[in-house]
Image (cartoon, rainbow, N blue to C red; front, side):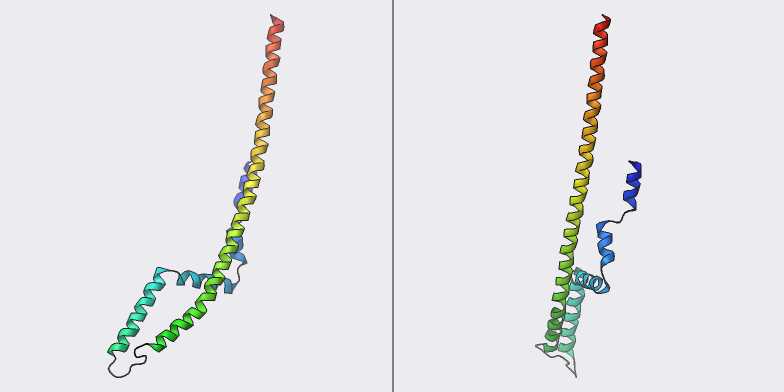
Length: 145
């Protein structure tokens, strides 16, 4: 049993195998989606938008994007056009990871079930052997009386 446990430690998990199988574009999409779905991104973007609006409102000579901030809206539209497919790619990979994890869990549960069934059979055979020996001892005791 000890050899088997040591062997299990050396194997890579499904998560490690999946992570190693990703190419550069997939890893990039995952990191971009992760970054865009964070409070850090929202706070930084809010600060940039606020600065954009303040600088355009108080600019003395040159308003590069005066109210209604058409250039800012164009930047948001471009950001959304690229962000949506990147986030969808990351979600698709998350679904793949979930399926891989469910499959690995299922295989692990099947292996555990087989082990438990084998142990149960072994314990039952030990109990039967014990009972047989007890019966033999009782029979010997009765013959000796």
